[in-house]
Length: 301
Length: 271
Image 1 (cartoon, rainbow over the protein chains, first blue to last red):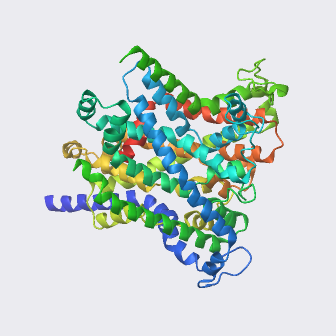
Image 2 (tube, rainbow over the protein chains, first blue to last red):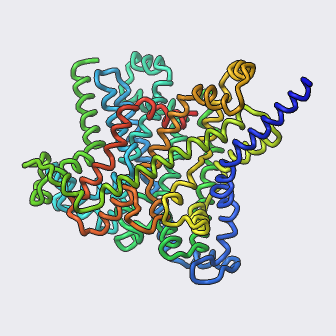
Image 3 (tube, rainbow over the protein chains, first blue to last red):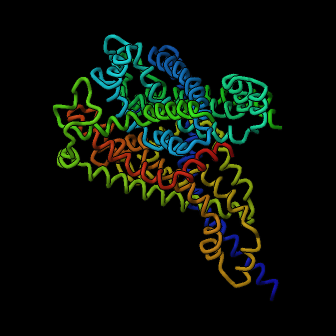
């Protein structure tokens, strides 16, 4: 009798487990597993809205090799990685700046974090307005004597991509600052105090003690922001549209893939471009974790 | 610290704050300007006169209520579905034993590493085949469950001591009862972290809604604003008003829950 109840209970629990799992697993199968499995073969087909879908072998890869827009987009995406060191250095400096016990410092930390929680669309619209030729940025720079004539930040092909990077950097700073701040606060202060007592200058302490101690954080943050930079989409799309104006100067792989897939409805070829970009990101990630294991994390072990 | 040092730090901190908040403050100032002052050069930092007219008129000029309602529907249904699906998936993986548990867990976790090159393209094709194109359901259903949240919630469920569950079982509570009234309340801190992530992700989402939604009338705020400012047919003051209105809810919630926001986002990395 007792045994029967236990088996019964176990059965009930088993049914309960599977019943709980089913809805989530179905959604995962359809929208997470299926794209991973189907995304690869898709890159070898001509799936689009006009033709019947056929296996085309390497045709998409050959097309990509001969596609100047692809190379332009790839080049711009790689160039976009320039914003990574800029974000990381500024974020570390900001973390050092707010790592004090002055009254009201908490207010500043929160203020620096506000761009992080707002949408990239709102940020891009705000910055587009700041970048106006007769806008506030030109006015401030002229008043400070940095530039003589107003610059058309958004219209000059040589500058437009950097204008977009400005938005990316600005929006990411608060986030990385908080990570570095957490890092600074977990690092023992004795070392820095000892160096100060020995007569090292404030900058020397930051450069020779604080930054080396932050190295594990720098590695993680760098990996995250490289991935973010290569995948950049929202700010470019809102500020420069799906063609990467002016004259393709801001065409990055994210925007190009979007255009191929959702404006030209050329799914097969878009998947090929996406595949190459994510392979590059994967190789970069594996390499940096390798490097990470050898160097960075050993500090605290 | 010396007085000069403190003064220097405050000055630097204020300059950085002005850079971080400047673009939004400038947008706010623009939204309070009358038409002729919009492009004034040198620019007016504090509008003169200050007018709230744009905030009233904008509702006649663009269907802002519509966009706000779409955003609320998308965020509420997205957050609601996500938290429920993630909770019911994480719970058995953490607390119950059944054949295939480890296999299912590792299969789910592996998707965090596997490259998902054409994810949006394949999901778009799927949404089309399911007949969900141009519907809010199509926007939220692919995010009804997220692997990272399942992982976070599972880790939280695991830490609950066994005794809690056993004593409830002795009292004769059913499995679902135990889950709802004992286990879920125990992991409230993790749930609030997940809620914050979800709220931010849905409220700010941009790319997927413009892919799935064909009709701009169905757009939530972020896609709508991007679409409207691109069409160039509106006075920028109205775009500024719309943008300010779109960021106020998230900033207010952030200011109320700042600790949870920052700890959640930073903690997820340090993990």
